Image: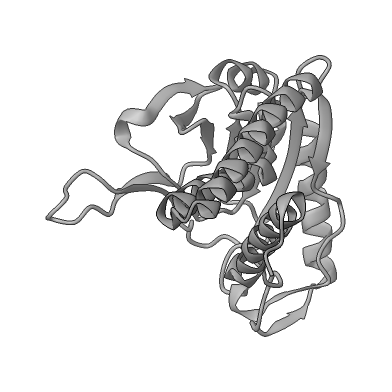
Length: 266
């Protein structure tokens, strides 16, 4: 028996959405933070270290642009346990805060939602006509837009979002190209790549070439070399990341308390 009209369309769209969500849930990134890795309890010294660093990171960050809202921030809670395989490495601390422009973000989202619904309607229509190749292509494009809508920062394309991350003792930084290095920020080396500005604090950063002989000068990564003789509860390097439009990122970085961050390295 043929299911007609709106009911068939609703079943078709719900089934497609549930299939997508099932695939996302099955993806390794959706698993628990530490998975099957053996852990141990965080020590009082580690908790005190992380709380102190988090507070300085938080105090170093200025407010977002006027009229914008803070919608996501790292809590001050320290994990109760950490993986055993991290013991040989410097203790890493990460702080993040995100800001958005509610009006602009809503407009971006509405545009994406309208396009998503348009593609789903067209995919359903193509399937009804027996053109499954076209239906699948439209469905794939619609699912791509759905994933973008799930990622607020990508949906805003940097115009209406400002995401800040600060890493202490981050040994593996982003992949960048030498030509993406920009003018130093408060005396610190900096890069701008794909909507994100990276600022490096500490003397141990270097741009390492991982290019193959077949594709020279193509793969470079920022890495922080471990400084000999330092305790794992000392900060050896700091990485500041700001995702947003070039103008918004530059304005935000001008107001960061660089002196407070630099004091952690001394």
